[in-house]
Length: 329
Ligand SMILES: C[S@@+](CC[C@H](N)C(=O)[O-])C[C@H]1O[C@@H](n2cnc3c(N)ncnc32)[C@H](O)[C@@H]1O
Image: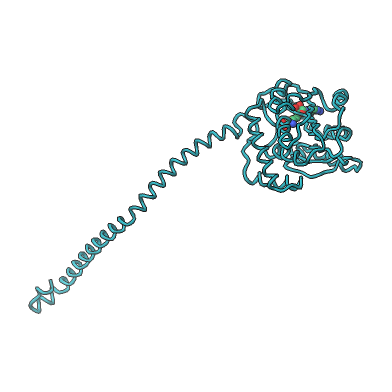
């Protein structure tokens, strides 16, 4: 516009306005140029990024499908392993298994590769027998697998096994399988009142949470899962403190005794005194629920029993919430 300003006066009056208009026109032209350049750059970038964006879209779609599939599997797995239909959640986490493997290796002096193998096999047996059996194994996966893995690795001196307190007989069946796997076909004896539900002094005799009665036929059905050793098991109904019960099963020296009946301090003390008489030299005694806060009497009794110095039993160590003792030769 400035070129239109010919004479001086006009120039003086109009120049500022013309300059202002020029600047605005320049700005608009600049802006348009900028936008055009931007658009072209965008187009070029779009073209270059397209394959990457397409690949991301495909990945996302695949991930969506995989997550949906995993959710389906996770649901099915939860039906097998978690609390659904049973009392204890059977899903262990990696840290729990690692801790247990360390404890078993330390307790048994075995290489941790063997400890891990046996903890893994124990876990599979627990899941398999609980799935096929009637009722449940008592206790956490951590503790149950600890007992099942440790006992065979501690190399019991003979095949005679006594379980004091069996509930549904599923632990006895699983231990029998674990021992068999290690080459020892158990001769099993079980003592339990089989009173319809679990008896525990000091605890209310409530209904069994699985709804499965604590009864001879149930225990027999579960022992049938443990082959000949299970089918031929001797089951003595009654309390371990009962002289008649003791007389009936004190006919041998046991290579393994699991103390898991009366969990009161007095009950465990009485059982350990009896154990002194019927354990074989080198035999293994499992004191279940040792260190479990729900059953303080168990640890109190075991510690008191061992503290006397007169015991044939010595503490080997712990795994999960069980203590393992060995009878001196
Ligand atoms: C904790 S459960 C046993 C669990 C089983 N050992 C397992 O690991 O699945 C305790 C069982 O011992 C029984 N019991 C209680 N007092 C007992 C005693 N003095 N002698 C034998 N069994 C007893 C209970 O009735 C119950 O069946």
